Length: 625
Image (cartoon, rainbow, N blue to C red; front, side, top):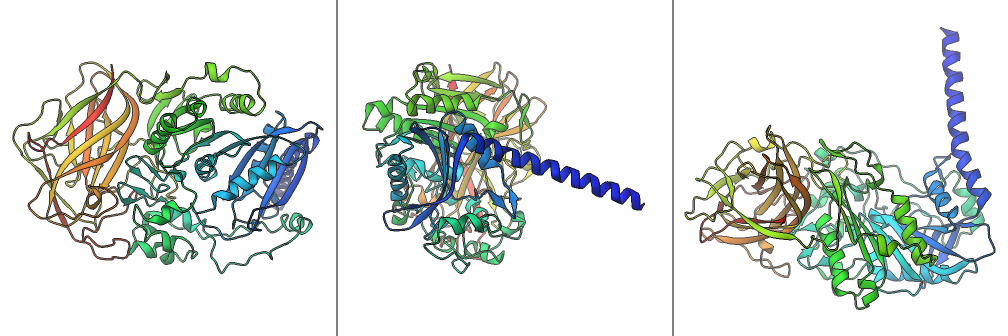
């Protein structure tokens, strides 16, 4: 037995040594081709210094820069162990002739100053561009790259039109979208006036408590290089089961209840969708110009597909410089948030098989940067489709000159029933014929027993929700879900574009929510969710005001558009679900008309969806002709 233990220990030592050798190998490879300068404290105009690692080719010639600014930890060592992810990214850039520069936002890890999610000064990005452009190893051209929170800052800084900001590749960038047309996302904080709860779970493990210890201001690079080997400034947060944690009331105390850090959340949760503070920080809004050629990457099962696509269209239509308008390109993949490169020849998203969803992302990214930062005449802007999008169902990549495709024709389907659309076993119909009589469908919405989020277009909620396409049949047995289904299709149809919906609602409470979900129903009954949205009814007339309901009145509610590209095969059916909750994807409306975030007691709502000649509840689908 003793010999076995010795043998196992020896094996573990060998494995550990092999792993360390592999990790050290990338650092050695990088050192062979790159000048490595870590923990450079880059000064901003107000004297705050941001921690920056620089990897640049060993050459006397000036080189272009790929710049990534992030709130996340990129320190070379984690708990005393070598971390290789940033090194591998740097190696790929340097071997292609680029300097790779990665920087922490102010107030994050080794960077000085106070951190404010979505409120970091725009001047930080501008000042970083100026500093890098002035270095003798720089050719003055900078491209920005990143996904999620490493992308969100790029849009607002692009509005400043720094002369060195030559190109950008934002991926999964919804957290940087403020107001775009009818979308008042405010950095994914809201959808239709309802709070998206992802940021609560995210901030628990991200925001720095103001009482946490910090390094002294003005600390030198030599000390930082020494400290980074054994002190990476990363707090270690106890894990929380967010499937339970997000259910706590009041909402404003969720992080406190989890014994999490204090921080910006306590203030942000009190803001309304059009609060002036949303317009003071680092979000991009549609009254801002845009000055950078951009290659946008969006995912169908991400938290912000629709506003992301709306932003792409907004820039193409509204940038003041025609060259900028004409140099916007887009890829839409069928993946989860920032999972582009994880697609395989057999890509499964949730439970649905998407087939081969791979693209050569390295070729796309570096082809784009080679053109704009190195001025290589590689023909990418001539050969790259304006929009390359993946159609689920048929499981194929397609191309278009616009989004939606120019041959998409908005086709109206009406909700109808005999007054009993509750559950998938009810009599709810989705029909091209406008109903005549009003047989409203009634359901009870109890905020203490909300409809549970199952799959969907989400990110960052920890254990609370698994994103993607999942069979909704069991969910559709709930009495508080109204189900409207078309007849089996006599021929296959492709739906690609924005999906609009109008519902007519009456209720016995001052305020409630309306939710909707678009679904592809297979002949065997499987029902896969495509997209979903919500509208807080008090904001039905706009986000500048709150207008409450009166009992006995019927109100028109237009929901923020959804988006998808899906081929419904012959024999499939189109379905929508309507309810008043999708929790914890969105916060529960407690139906009181109060603040919601500081309340602990809800009111049961008796809601009715009307459909008739007078109240034509409908969904408008972009069918490819």
